[in-house]
Image (cartoon, rainbow, N blue to C red):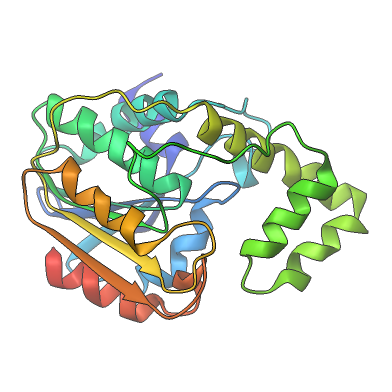
Length: 249
């Protein structure tokens, strides 16, 4: 597959980056898709290109084979975004996407590509042990966890009464939980790029102390921002989150 084909397969453009300009690559949470970042992209500074990763097994990649490995996802994305190399490149990831973005940043720096900043949202530091064990549970338990994290649990509850929708949605969610649970942090050199950590003050799956430990994974500067809301706080306040991103890049 050519570089251009891989780029088109793995990313969805929200706004084109100028040659040699700044680009922000966004990584969805578990079960999520690229389109979830459209609202955020609308608030990013006009001089910044915005791209979102489209994982296999969802939306327009529904027929593509699922990848239950965060490291493999990071390696695929690193290779796919090569057309953006040479310019300023920042990464933003929420929840599972934060870990994939971190592993992608490691690979980018190893290849000599400067990372302007890594934004990690709603996720414990990669060196923290993962306690989730949901990949092997039944659909009911998986849906219950999705309801617990959702801003609008009713939007998830429909999966209990719509088998066709559940069949389309749950395989990707289960795959991503498996990827999270299988992930093992490999100790190595800390990143050189700054890390900016963001979290919801009422997030039920990550504490501020766990988020703050992202600071140990960079030799650059670190800052942390807390927002009102739960795990998916960013869906309700894209403008405020974009303000943090714009101030850094």
